[in-house]
Amino acid sequence: MLTGADLLSKVKELADASKSDLVRACGYVSNKKDGSERLNFTAFYEALLNAKGLDLGSSPKGRKGGRKLSFNTKIQFNGNLMVGKAYTGMLDLKPGDEFEIKLGRKQIRLVPLGSEDEEE
Image (tube, rainbow, N blue to C red; front, side, top):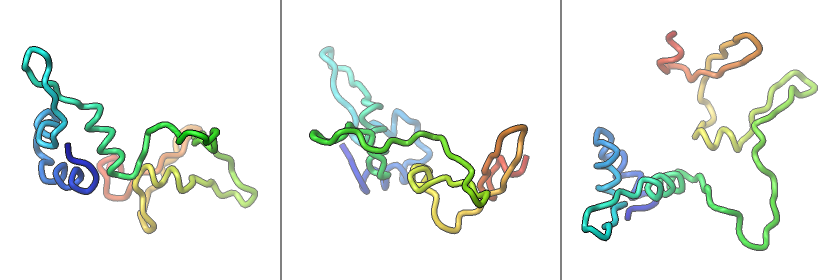
């Protein structure tokens, strides 16, 4: 089973393949008792998230809690709205990425410049 950079490389190489073919090509296959194959999608997606730097595993033993992402924020005293590094990291956003701000009724949406949604 591929992991890390090897997994990311294979996924990019097989970008046009079906999900089943991709899981199979990356080695996430086991055999059932009757001899047929089982595709291990969950293990594949967990490995893919780990390769991208997102660990969904449980906290190490001996560690109690810690900060958790709340998906809530406040307007700061100067009127700015803080998103936070944890969220930009989850979305793989980099310094210099640009967005269009779309305002709706009681909502704010950030749309990456050049995306299909931006052209609506």
